[in-house]
Amino acid sequence: MRGAGVTGVAATKIAVLVSGSGTNLQAIIERVEAGDIPAVIALVVSNNPDAYAITRAKRHGIPVVVHENRAYSNRRDYDAALVDILRHHGIGLVVLAGFMRILTHVMVEAFPNAIINIHPALLPAFPGLHAQQQALDYGVCYSGCTVHFVDCGTDTGPIILQAVVPVLADDTEQTLASRIQKEEHRLFPEAIRLFCTGKLSISGRKVRILE
Image 1 (cartoon, helix red, strand yellow):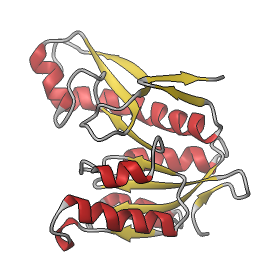
Image 2 (cartoon, helix red, strand yellow; image 1 turned 90 degrees about the vertical axis):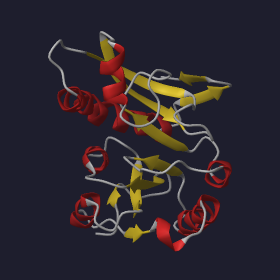
Image 3 (cartoon, one colour; image 1 turned 60 degrees about the vertical axis):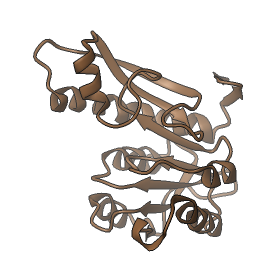
C-alpha cells in the first residue's frame, strides 16, 4: 500500500512532519485509515533519521523522506528544499506532529493557512518548549492542548481547537504531559478532519468552524 487513507479526487494529500516517537502520527493514521478523514497521508518527513515515527509510517506503507538539518547552512535553505519535496508530492496540508523546528517564512508563505500544529498548552499561554513544566511552574489549575494554524511566530497562529486538562496537586511534567497527550490524540485528528472537509474559515485571528 502506498500511503494511508482513502483515495480519490476529494482526498486531501497530507504530509506529516515529525522528529520523535510519532504518537500523534499514529493517532492520525488510525483515523485516516478508519475513513473518518477524507485524506491520504502521502508523505512523512523527519529531520531525525532515528525517529520512531519513521517505523510507524513504514508499517502503514507511507512514504518517508529523511530531511536532515545538517545538510543546510541556514533554516531558509532547509525550508526551501522542504517546500520542493512537499510540492513534488502534491501536498495540500502540512501537519506538524512533534516536528522540532520553527518554520521560516519560506514554508509559511508556500502553504498559507495550510500548515497546522499541536501544542501541549492552552495558547497563548506557555508557548515554546517545555510547556507542561511552564504550566506547573506558573501554578495554573488547568492546562491542555491547542491545535493552531502556523504563522511565522512561535505558537502564535490562529487557534482551531483546544482541550482543557486539570492540573493535579502531585503532577510532574511527565504525568501532566501524559494526560495532555491523550487529548492531543483526540483533538489533532479532529482538526485535520475539519480542514479536509472544508469546515474551517479564517478571518484575521479567528477560526470559525462551519459545522
